[in-house]
Length: 174
Image (cartoon, rainbow, N blue to C red; front, side, top):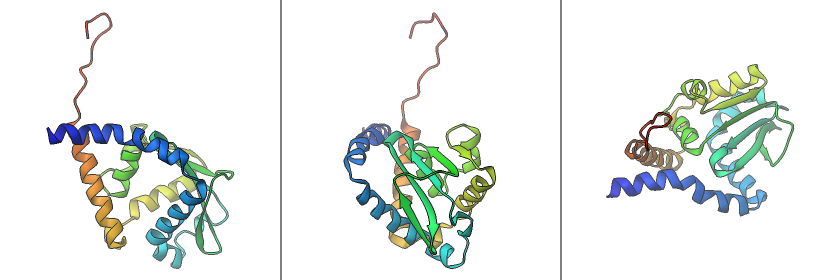
């Protein structure tokens, strides 16, 4: 019974988040996103590893919850805007992005399964994808890492417990 509840929450969670995300003012979303990104990428910024984003805009879209933002590096810090001319765009569902962040899914695999869509400047897209691959969980701030891993484990288990749909042929009763 708890497995079924978890599975339903995982399947319905993004649709439940869509309305609050839509209603939240972008200033609040920007503040949260900039804080989390600065927290996670502090060392990479200090070491100049994000210089490839200086003056270039990355669009990130979480399709199933209707969240989209643009990020760049300005004056050695990550900035977030509601709209900007994107040089490259990444889009995926929340569970897939969560699995990438938790190192439970490979971005290449999701890209070839068409679950992670990358559009725009190919070279910049590769830099961003390689940055995603290089994120080490141990370098994350501990509270963020613990929350991320627990949520990823919950989602992963919920996806495994999801009721499978039987493929039917045309004309075959469902």
